[in-house]
Structure formats: C-alpha cells, structure tokens
Image (cartoon, rainbow, N blue to C red; front, side, top):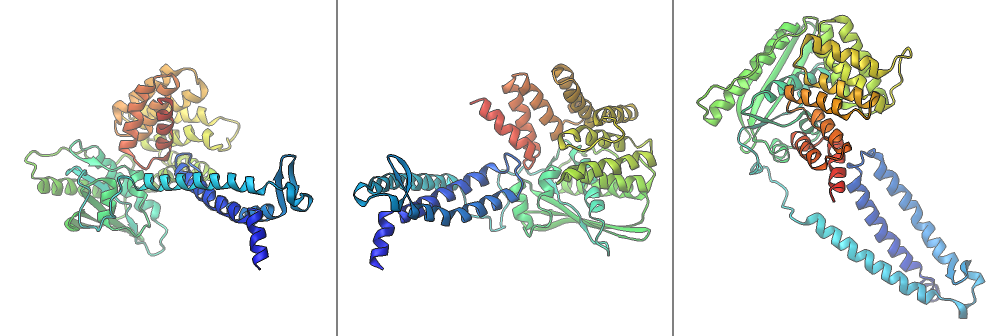
Length: 445
C-alpha cells in the first residue's frame, strides 16, 4: 500500500487533484459572477459544474497514465525512471496550487469586503428614503389558480399610478416582482429594495365578481398602516375605479404617516377601454412581454396583443404595448407572419398609439427601436425619439437604457453613463441595464 502511495506521489496525482479542485472552484465563482451580467441561462452554472465533476477523475487518470517530458506527452510506461522529470513537474504544480490558493483567498476576501451580518428583520436599510414604497405582485387567490397574470396586471396598474406621484420613490416592477414566490419577509424585501413601505394584496375572481384586497405596511415595524377590501362586479369600469380608490387611499395614508400638510396630487385613473376581454388580454400580454423567459413568449404576447386591438381598436395602451412587443421581436428571433416585418408593424402600431394619446412614452421608444433596426446609422433620429419618450415617461428604465445605448454607440460614453446609471437606479434588477452599464464602465476604463 505504501508503494502505491509513493507512486501516486511520484506521478503527481495528488497535486493534480488539488490543483484541479482549486481551479475548478475559482472557475465556478467567476461563472456565478459573470452569469447575470451576460444574461446566461440559469442552467449554465449547473452544466459547468457537471462538466468539472466529470473531468476530475479524468484529470487524475491522465496524471497517473501519462507524463510530460521534454519530447512531449508520453505514457508513463514509456518513460525510463532515470529520465523522468516528474519532480520538476511537481514543483511547477506546487507553484500553480500556491497561486490558485492565494487567488481563492483573495476572492473570498473581496466577496466579504464591506459585508454586514444578515438582517434580522428588525430594521429597514437606513439609506431608504422615508417616502418610498414597493408594490409587490398581488397574490392570485382564485379557486382555479389561473389568474396570476390578472393579479400581476392590477398590481402593476397601481404601481404605474404611484410612479406618477412626484413625492414618492417607487421601486420598479422588475425589482419588486423578483421576490414573487420567495419565502422572504417584508423587512428583508424592503431592505433590499431600499424602501420604507410595502404594498401587498390579493385578487380573487369568481364568476362575475372580483375581490381585491390591499394592505400598506411599514417594513421596519411590520405595522399595518392601511388595509381595505373591494368587492365589485367584474367590469372594466369597476376595475379602474378600484385602482383609483386604492391609489388615492395609499397616498392619503402615506401623507398622514409622513406628516405632510400639502395635498399630494395623483393622476386620476381613467378607463381607457370599456371592453373587459380586451383589458384582461392586455394584462396577460403585457405580463408576458415583461416576463419573456423563452423565445416563444414574445410571439405569444404579440398574438394576444393583436387580439386586444382587434377587440378594441381605440385602446391606445394596447397599441403601445403591441408596438413595443413588435419592436423587440427581431432581437428575440420571433418568426414573422405573412412576410411582413415586425419593424413595419411596430411602426404602424406606435403611430396608432401616438395618434390616440401623445403622452405614451413607450410608443416613442418603440419608434426609436424601429429606426435603430431599419436605419442603424440614424442615431440623431433614434435619440430624438427616445428623448421625446423620456419627456412623457421620465421614469421608464427601457427608455433610459435605449438612450444610453444610442449615445454610447456614437461615442458619448460619459453622457451614456448618466442614462445607464438612471436606468439602474430606477430598476436595479433590470438585467439588460446591468449588462450594458458594465460594458460602459469597461469602455471608460
């Protein structure tokens, strides 16, 4: 047995095993760090780990069966014991192991630099502005459990109303919705989103009735500041009325809580469609555009939103989201129908939306995205469309991102940096924004 151990040592099998393990760990850490920046699929790390695990016994086998000589790689049996240079190879492996361990320790130290103990839920991050709120995705309590899109859509509608209140800082949809289905307490969610208050709620549809509940929570104390339940007949007029009442009640509760003497103005929620089927499909299609986890999602969202504008041709927001879905379709390799390009149809949909409502910021963004694909060198026009969109929707991270990309393409790196930073501030969980912002920092050195 001692002879086998000595032979394993002589052939550097143990050294190869240690070097392989440390380098594999480093590779996994780098992969985990770069995966979100490069928008790699969640399965990437698992596949890489599987490859490394499979490669471990192979590395040990090659260390045992082969030897590196001045003449190249030979089987151990071909190398005379007196001519073997395994001792020199072992010294080199020692240096590799030492360097890898130092790098690993440095990486661990860097990861822990400036870290703090996990929150015990007793306090919200001190950097959270007092007048700040996150709207969590409402829970679907319908008996069949098939109304998640509807619950998400209504919570987003309320979020969009609150975004228009200048006195409030509202966490973006992407940032708030990332906690869906996670077993994380309200205080920790508030700490990560840097908000003081959290709105959560639920939706239950049953036949021709709907019940919507909402409750406003002060995250630091888990204190319920306000709550209410709305039982109504399921009509678009009632749904929009509930959004209006709920938003007004939240702002009133926050004003009282914050001790504000001046009345905060909020936009009145108007029913921009009377067609319940069109509105429900609008919520479904918009939710799918937001989520788009697969190449098929954009195509399905387009199909749904086409039905929306067919059911209600006067529904301006339906045209706007159809324009945006069409505008991003080429980058998702979504097949075209009838030989007509997505960009042509996106332009038509955006023009329809703006003809009905010139305040729809994302429709301007869709026009800019169309020009970026059909006239990629026409940066002045692209930037002008994005600028007009931002004038209407200054808190839309999509518009800040596209403006930044256009400026960066023209070489205005410092100007682009400002828009990337605002995109990241508005939506910290926006993966595209994070990736492009990182590249901007790289270009800036």
